[in-house]
Image 1 (cartoon, rainbow, N blue to C red):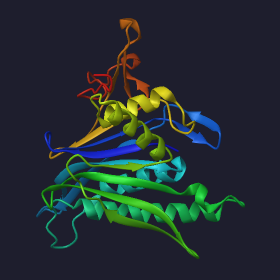
Image 2: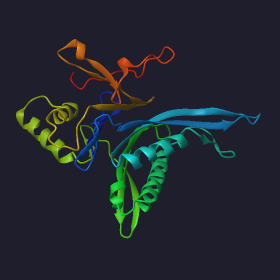
Image 3: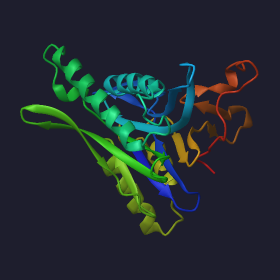
Image 4: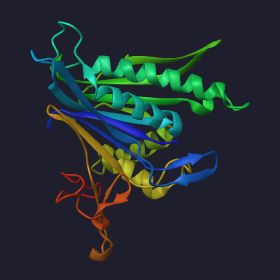
Length: 273
């Protein structure tokens, strides 16, 4: 399970999303380096007069999930492959696509995946494949920041994934995952103490305490601005400079060789600053 925190920052005009990195099954911890916030790259193609396919529009959104890692990451892999291969139909103007349309695509793929996996589960509960997700970013069609939530729902006797648009309020936030109750408890403690508080500091404190066994590991962070979504490298500070690292979805990128002269990630973020 997990904890996902989503909020809109009016000052920076961006949607922020943070999470832990632990993936567990029951009482067993599978890994503390699991990706839970991922980009959704979008590429729209059109045919020119010579019938050659050219890129008409590119953009990116954010995806964050809580629940079954298998069905969620499978859904992301399939749907993100589709969003990079959007071809204009007939005389349709091959420009930008809306965030809502992308969210509906993810809902459709996710529902199919959960039904398919649960049908082959050999007695395992259907709910073991459930996941919920945020899909968020700046919609290039509506020209505004938006966020949608996709929720697994068992409406007897049919399983469905339902979708809804979230209200992005100033100073408001949205939560997903098994750590919701603990997050709100720590937020209340910080508020009563009179100390300066932020959602980032609350999540950092939660990860330090490790009171919920299904929530833990490391900090993940992504930000969606008007020009698209950025999955940020995390600067992990330590009193000993030798132990300071930069990680990207749990991968210590300081140990990875440059990719043809390019490093991995940009605009690093530190939850400790």
